[in-house]
Image 1: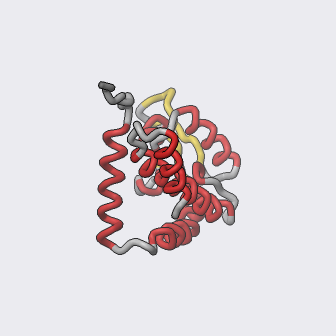
Image 2 (image 1 turned 45 degrees about the vertical axis):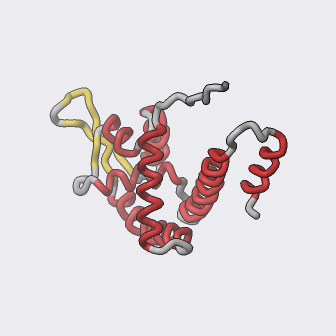
Image 3 (image 1 turned 120 degrees about the horizontal axis):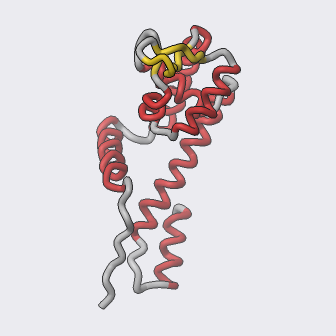
Length: 170
């Protein structure tokens, strides 16, 4: 019995009037997320990075040459806040992985551009990152992975910004 199943059984005894089945899904999802984050963080830390730094650099690589975006576009592409982007950029710039360059179309605007050193880091770390992800997914076959990816996409889409619904009591 996994820890979440034990918790569900305890709730069934203490509150048999409530359907605690959502805890089974969300509890396992939360535990899986924490385990994934820990494994990925271990991979990144072996290269002197954290997940946020790698994400910013990988986002720039995905854009293709010249590997640059405006900070607001970077925040949207990396799905983080503009203040989180600013913090990450400061660290990455001081490490020589990104630079801020003038936007020729906007005299006040800047682009964030990946340096050759930053591109080299992503090229070096990405294979190990993918190998870590592959290892975590080994228990699932291709079909199960596709089903899980689809279910998680639906869950993420339907969960963003929704308020909880309380069941009506009779």
